[in-house]
Amino acid sequence: MRDFGGIVERTPVRVVRPGSADEVAAAVRDAAADGLEALPRGLGHSTYGQSLTSGVSLDLRGLAGVDVVETGAAGDGGTAVAGAGASWREVLAATLPHGLAPPVLTDYLDLTVGGTLSAGGVGGTSHRYGTQGDNVRALDAVVGGEAVRCSPGVRPEVFDAVLGGVGRHGVITAAELRLVPAPERVLCCTIPCRDAADMLRVQREVRAEEVSARIKPADDGWAYEVKAVLPTDGGEPPPGTAETEELAYFDFCDRMRPDVAELIALGEWARPHPQGMVFLPVSRAAEVIESTMAETTPADLGLSGIILVRVVRSGRVPVAGGAAVLFGMLRTASPGCAPVEAMLAANRTLLDRARAVGGARYAVDAVPS
Image (cartoon, rainbow, N blue to C red; front, side, top):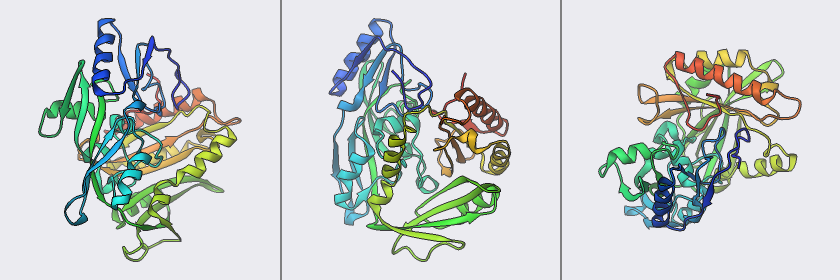
């Protein structure tokens, strides 16, 4: 069995496909009785075997379904309950008819709720709303073979351990998600930047619902740009905007779908993805990014690789101060580019550099131990 990273392989003793939280609890107890690890798996989008086990693999895709249980007073928000195996695409399909959406979405919608909450969950609105875990009202989980309900006010130690715990401290079976009003249409603005410091400054200062940054190959090295997204009735484009594109809100949320279809057709989606992702202190992020880019070539990234930079404000980020910069070298081991081993070595260098300034790794990155 492999994950999206395509680097680590493990063969489980058995695969269990539970259809309820009680069945998850029974499978965890049975695994413990046999002296085996029981590890949850959604769509296996980890990059270095975090969703793989040599024990019991719990395929949670059967724990699906999304119910909008509260639409909020005067449409000011609401709540949805989603099974751990539901995808964020399915969550949106249930909430958008009510004019609502989760505050934080992943760029790629075909990931499971349980999977991203187990990793942390960072999106383009994390500069405002934090991680996806910051927007969970309560969880149903299985801990030690027991089905429990937890929240910030009920068994908070379980709640905090399971969110971002990569399945090692318990198995999420369902989540109660906070919702916010969703716009009908959005304006996507591209803002070119001079360098990493300018890119981070723009992200901090721009007023937009969603903000993220990319670093792309250019003729003279690397080009830095910020993408700012605001409702079409949310005012003028930010200063420095060079390009704009108007989209329906769902089309914006699902913007990766055509790209993924093309990558699948090209064979790139199935190649190894040695992705390096770290959280950096805001005050030291620019120097780490610039140092990393100075020793990186397009071949070190891969033909379909992406470099992503986001400011994240959250007490759940493992960096002092409650805010950090997520720096993601989302590599693909394409033919003719750097081999997997070289990409993993570069990830190790990045992690060492991050830790030297008080940073930390993201839970589902690809770094050899």
